[in-house]
Image (cartoon, rainbow, N blue to C red; front, side, top):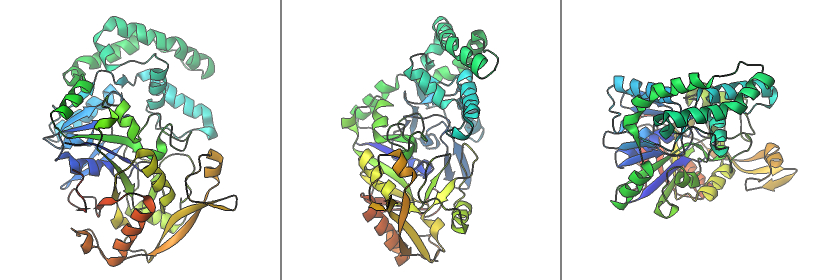
Length: 427
């Protein structure tokens, strides 16, 4: 049976939660492999809406085992709060597994994140202020705190003291803040240890054994391709690898076991935070996309920047992820436009460019070159098959598929769990 990767093909917020949840009933494990509680998924089940930030979307499927892999950074307070909220709504969370090698977001990571962004002023990156970047920096600098460290107080104390040696210098001498005491941090982290312990496991072993037993494992990216630390619009990116390669390093499952890579693609484009965005709209169309699409960040609460579909980005996502399929979401949001522009290339210094420029400067100055496709006015939310869609909607989907370089195997025509057209099965 397959191991599948499902990830965002734009700047995130493409509807990965819905796609993961739809597949959740057919898979045995759903694995978050990177990011932290800076990624939000909204999943609608019946008349119930769930906002997930750290937990895998598969936690809403009773037969599925949700896994937080070693590549994720975990804020224990957020984790426990999210679990409590789901339990209160009758969701069984007892099957959750958390890698003992996942890194902990400590209180000082959150503090450093917030004060650094304020210090940068106009040059700020637009982080969520939740300590994600500083935690990954600690991991790379080998002063990070892992989940397993919560169960050895002596090791925990030593690691916190080592991390604070430098951070307190930074806080007191550069940012004019009070020093943080190691004992206070250790006490807070130890307070989470017993509550989290039932979920902690050797997830690398669990997942590889599951695949050997022909179980289906779905790897869920937290952010989009263009936010990847290596392959995104650096420096306006996240601090981890949401691209397909990150699924392997963030879970401990080898690349030869991945059989399908599915990119989630919104029928238009959005992004949250700072950074270049060639097709961004500042007019009534942009506001209409924001309003109709409900484009507000699940985690940040910030309005998303909105623009027309960018085929250059979609082709890039196909290439760097090795995408085998697309799941096109929010097609219903475009209902009502007489004509719909699609960005097919960029103009950079007077030249037509059809692939994403590797230069940050060139991308910053890229101007979209549009082709216009006929729109539709019919309600598509009740469509159950591709042929149920209006002809112009069908043509729009076919055009996006041809421009993007991979087949569109499913289409979201509304926010509900059952408002999806499946063209080709992912399993």
